[in-house]
Image (tube, rainbow, N blue to C red; front, side):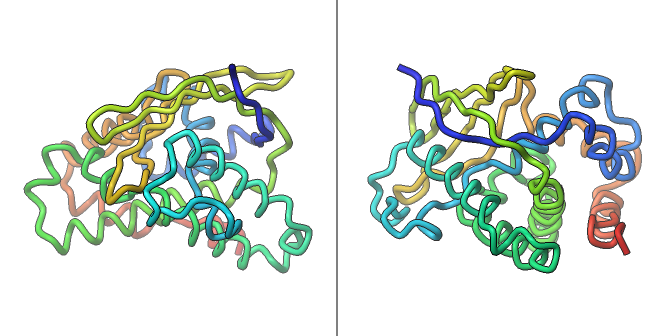
Length: 243
């Protein structure tokens, strides 16, 4: 039986604005990326925040008792708790709201694993300093994307379909449903020390990791890894763009 809970999505008319920063960083993205990147960013905003931080009764990663589906469900509830908190809605609280979102998502999104998979073979050739810098820059890039737009979401439904686990990895299949949209979202997780952490999201068949791997590989092929770092360092943040 499918389980339904509340979720959120960004208004469709904001899609073109949502793409603007990606084109500054990746001006030659492919047409399929153009169609799907809007929803990939929306789902990035949803990915696996720790319910335990906002809901003390939820399972803690240290217990090793949580299932992948339970992590996804509790995490989405945590997102909605932040978005719906009336004390965090005023514009004067935007910085605090963003900081809270960035803090909690770091607890459930394995940015190092995602970085390894995004850079693929290139990761092995990097020294520790370059690895650490890339992880932090990539984390900041994704955090800025979801935090800048999450306020515009409206109530939708997440339908939980199934869960598969094997050898320390899991995939939780869901659908985002409303009167205007209905498409699949599959969350991929890895188990570390008994806790599940997200490292990829598949939106309508398109992998977030593979999307950025394609773009980053193109940048490095045409210039260098150091140029990729430079672009990530110098990209305009949403806060900067508003000033």
